[in-house]
Image (cartoon, rainbow, N blue to C red; front, top):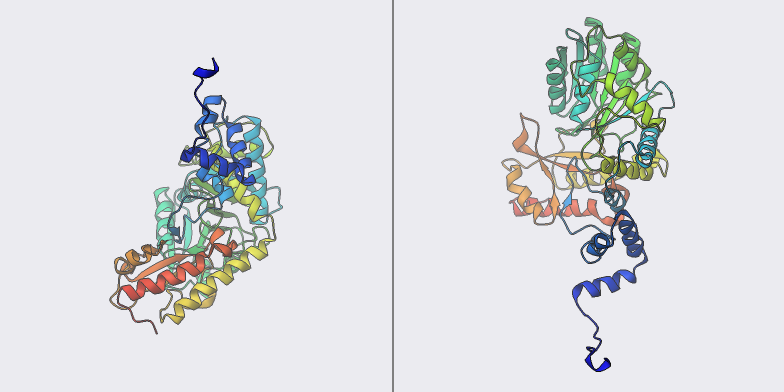
Length: 440
C-alpha cells in the first residue's frame, strides 16, 4: 500500500501563499472568521478562502473620490455591508435599526421625545418629497431661501405637490441676508421656510440658527426646514436649541455611509402639522401616515413592516454613526473646518478664488473654485484623474463650465494619515499646470 501512495508535496499556489499570509495577520483572521460565520455551508466557507482575503484589511486600489458626495468609506463601514441576508423583521436587524434611529437623535442633538428620526431607502431627494407630500398642502405658501441649484430643485418639488414657493435669491456665491428674510416674512404669511445648509452647487454655507431666529421672531408658527444633505456630520446643527422643524440629509455625504438612505429629523411641531392636514398626503411611499408608526416601532425594538428597508445599508449607517459619536461632535466639526481651510488656503495660494468669497459663507465640507479665465472642467479634470483623484465639475446652470468642486468630508478628514487632503491639493496644482495655467 505504501509503495503506491504518491509522495507528499507542498503546494506553492497563489491561493496557498495568500492563505498562509492571512494566518499571520490577526486582523485578517478575525475578519475571515466573521465572514465564514455568515455562511451556512462548508462549501460556501471554502469558496471565500482564496477570493475574499484581499478585501480583509483594506479596500481595493481606486482613485480617491473627493467630490461633494458620495465620499470615501471607512473600512469598517464598508465591511459592515459584507453580511448575510437577513429578515428585516428579525430581532437582530430590528435591534440594529432601533439603535441607529436612537443614535440619530444624538447626531442631530435632540433630546425632545416629540422629535422623530426617519430613515427610509432613497436618496436625499426623497427628503424633499417627504416634506412636500406631508407638511404642505396645495396652495400653501413656502419661502425658499435660494443659494444655488438646490433651491431651484426644492422649489420645483414643492410645486409638484401643489405648494406655492417663492424664492428669495441671493447673488451667486452668497446667501439672503437676515434683513431680506425678515422683509419677506413681513410681506406674506408662509407655511414654511426652507434653507439649504450647504448648497453643493456653489459651496455656500447658510446659517440655519440665524434663519430660525428671524422666523420665530416674525412668524412663530412657520415651519423651518433645513436641507442638510451636505452638512449633517460636518457642520454644527443643534435641532432643539435652534428650534428647527425638519432637517433632511442622506447617507452618502458627511455621514460617510453608502448612498441609498434618506435620513431626517422631524420636530413635534412638524408632526402636529402633518396630523392636522385636511387632505391626504400626495404620495403613498413618502406618506408619514405609513412611515411614522413603523419607525416608532423600530426604535422601540418592535418588528414592523410597511416597505422593506435595506439591512446592509442600515448596518453600514449604524457603524458610521457609532464612529461619529465615539467622540465629541465639536471635535469633528472643528476637524472639518481645519481641513477645509487647508484646501481654501491652498486655492488662494494658487491665485484662484472661491464662488463663496465671504469666509462666513464658505462650507466646511466642500470648496467651489473658479477656474482660470478660459479654462473649463474638461480641461483640468482628466489631468487630476491621472493623479488618482476625482473632483467634480460645476453644477450651477449659469456657470457650470467655469468652476470645479472639491469635497472634504468624512474619513478623508477624520483620518489625516490617509493623506487625502494633501493629495487633493497636489492634484489640483498638477492639473492646473498640465492644463496650461502658470501657478504664482
